Length: 202
Image 1 (cartoon, rainbow, N blue to C red):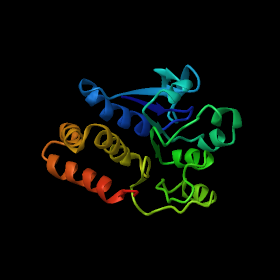
Image 2: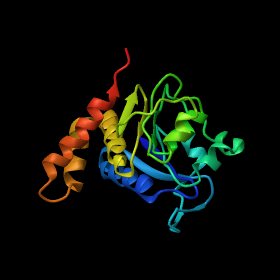
Image 3: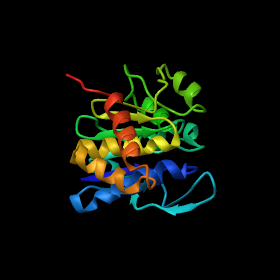
């Protein structure tokens, strides 16, 4: 199973790297994440240059697509050509967005009829798309999820791992990366966020 972590120019390092790093701890179980970029090299909001591991058309092959956030997301959603390179399909893919990435899902029409999570700076722009924003770090309905706040990227990763490999696999990953002495509370907080934020569709 392959995960595309879509990473645009001006990206937030925490959003793309935390999710991909946690998911890649499941490589041995067949789940692998790739930083997926629209150009060969993208530069983060803090000037870190990163070479993409996969080109944008990889999103059509991926089993999971996570849209990262950044300081140029509004430019992304205004670029019809760039948006056209994201033909996502929630009937066969898990799709998630981090912070301002919710704007991309809104632009693609994937949040119609469902609320979303995002960061405080992005909130008014998401609400301007007629999307209700929750005061919560994570929300999922069916195969679509959103997370709000940079460190909520661990919840997005935990959701992906839980949905693809099961809760035990997610717990193992979170336990490994948790601050020493805070393992149990870290794991339980993350799994509670995912459990309470997920709406199971009939």
